[in-house]
Length: 409
Picture (cartoon, rainbow, N blue to C red):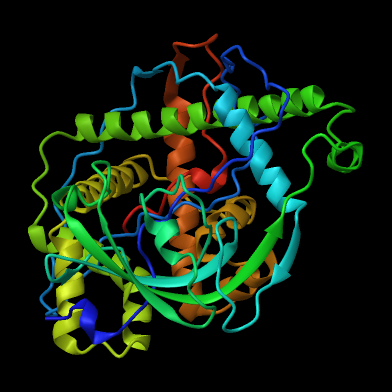
């Protein structure tokens, strides 16, 4: 069994949040109520969303897995209502303002051996242990964060203060009650942290005219705050459409009825995610076979991970059945229209995507992703979406880079 004394400091504890510097003038005080915006007007989110992959054809043992038979759900009277979101608050605006300050701050690379301080931007590798076992999802590589007293893991940033760049430290803390791994909430944990690099940050004066003009968002702090609030409204309007898409997918699953998913199928979906997530770093840390199995077992045993994997598979199976029933075809024209969005989760540029499509060995996953987007488009064209917080927009699908993953082929 692996444990912190092994000295395999590595990467990924849960990422602490960042502190937010508040300007002296007040931001907009009234809660902001965004109006849902049709997807064709919504701007793309910057973060790629994990794709839901097709169920694997065989288990890790090589035993062939049998996909459940699913009847394609009806798309008639497909209607969902999106609940009203929480209001955008003044604190939300101040946090975004702080992010802008960080973007325009003066930064100095700390030299190897120089201790890190609160407010620094640091580059870390982490491994987390609790109850003598590796914490699922705690292996993180090149984790960038701001050392901040209001971090996601209370006490994490404070414990790193004074650690020399290039060295490591053990951080002991109690996992918060909202920690993603449900079974470990409130449990004492130890994180092994390598400080790979750090930048000393000097924030600009939030009220200086030079900084305000550099932002190009207005001539006063109040105008800048109004501009930020407008941005947050736009983002929340898009998030409402993304939530609508998720609600439609859940309705598809409900209409599909009871489908018995073999546990091995769920295990393989989780294994795939683990192989793409933690496995490369653990191998780089020379984890042996028993330690790797312990890491995978942590993922397989996490209740929330299993729920998400099952949901992902049920959606993929429902979409696959719809593709077959409605005889959807991924024509060259449709592939060309969808390819840029389909490759977003793979981290490929449009040019790299087209090169990958020309290679039979790499074209399959991209075509699967595009086929999934086509199926999502098809479903959303039949959906009627209502928003509790605003007028009913026309049906459609959200921004394509958030549209999910390929239906299983």
